[in-house]
Amino acid sequence: MHEPKTDRDARVFALYEQLLEIEQRLIPTGLHVFGRPSSAGEKTDLLKMIASFDRPEAGVRALPEAVAEGAVREFVANGAGAAVRFLEKEGLTPESTRPLFTLLENVSAKLQTNNELDSLVRALRGEFVEPGPGADIIQNPDILPTGRNTHAINPYGVPSAVAFARSEHVANSLLDRYRQENGRYPEAMALVLWGLDNIKTQGEGVAQALWLLGTRPVRDALNRTTSVEAIPLAELGRPRIDVVMTISGIFRDLFSPTVQLLDKAVRLVAQLDEPLETNYVRKHVLQQVEQDACDPDDAAVRVFSNAPGNYGTNVNFMVMDSQWEREETLGDLFVTRKCFAYGRDSKGHAIEGREARVAMDRALSRVEATYQNIDTFEIGLTDVDHYFEYLGGVSKAVEKRAQARPAIYLSDSLSREIKIRSLEETVRLETRAKTLNPKWYEGMLKHGFRGVAEIENHVSNTFGWSATADAVDDWIYAEVANTFLFDDAMLDRLRDLNPHSVHSLAQRLLEANGRGYWEVDESVVDRLREITRNLEDQLEGVHG
Ligand code: BEZ
Ligand code: MG
Image (cartoon, rainbow, N blue to C red; front, side):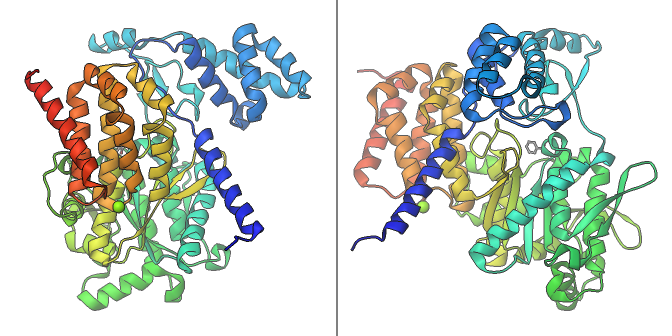
């Protein structure tokens, strides 16, 4: 049967958009070497990326992709004046482009210096190290020069007005996406909040939680964010979503007033006199009070973290060590580590890490979607094990308690247009843009031993998304095997650089197959086993 032409056109266009998305994805192409300034090539790439974002605070307009390339090359070769003249020929006035090159001159000079080693020595001697902000370089070029003492943020300033404004759109897009797929709003969502991310974004994660609840921050006479108010339903135009927050130990330590603010927002919403179908927090709190005959204060606990003084979920360690049999163990471990409540009850008593396992089990049992904001180009889902330990961990915990796998979403709030993606889409994108991208892995291999370890890390972190969320397609494992193990020349290179990591990589693929995450021909598995055996012989020094 012939496909109607319009359908075919639509599919070709969708494919084109996907290719464009991968092509335009910014990827780190190597590791930073402590104490070494950027090379000329790296510098040009960085400047090009910096030039592709609007910076209203510096009067800078982003350059269109097509001309940025030429203009930045001109700038690096011949200076700001030459770049401005280059763009004038493209029809852009000098007045409009001059501020950009003033900024780039400044960034370029700071990239040239590198005080990291000096600062380290100074810190070791107990001497003063100049403070500087911490952020993504593209998000905030003021982090340069590096080698300064990264300072955090005033928690009373969080969320900033900009973060709150930006987050309305993210919260709406998230709810739109869920509605497209499910035809209604999610009644409850689980959010992951990290400390460093909320420092970098001045509290975008916090602001997203407030928006979902339908609340806004209120500042006191000293301009400190110490309270919240409800956005009227008529203005909100949708129900208030019940939000279960898992915060990292770092967030808990750095953002104590913000923890209180989030808890306050939930409790405020829970006691609003509104119809239950417009206020899911109130609906769930009342349900639970009735079902469990529990105190309303206990039914409104939504902010969870580790016990005081503890950090992390340990889900990552359990996955990496292969020390588990059933996936639900990973979700249970997440709850065991994270079921400590923070906030303040209606009598004004502080709740500072009180064990609240039942409350967390109940709160998670209603969750229909889980979500985390990604705020940097440099660290994504497969770069570190923390995304799967948190977002994967909470999703697996929900799956057992709600008896259904939640929809799992991520946003990247750094793209020019904020985009919501499902976990599966994000894993595919990360895999294509990084793990399987020759530009990425060749960048890593320049670092020799460490580079192979990074490739293996990415594969293991990808595996973490199978274990916690069954979110990895078969083709991903197949292509990893084809690229790194079944290509003899590549296998030789990796083996020479770091046989331990290649061995771990091969074993991880066998584990993916063994645990049912990767269905593939037995002949492929046999080939993997043989490669693994040969690597073992090499590691044990058996030759010939
Ligand atoms: C945090 O900033 O809260 C964080 C950093 C690394 C891993 C987990 C959390
Ligand atoms: Mg599968």
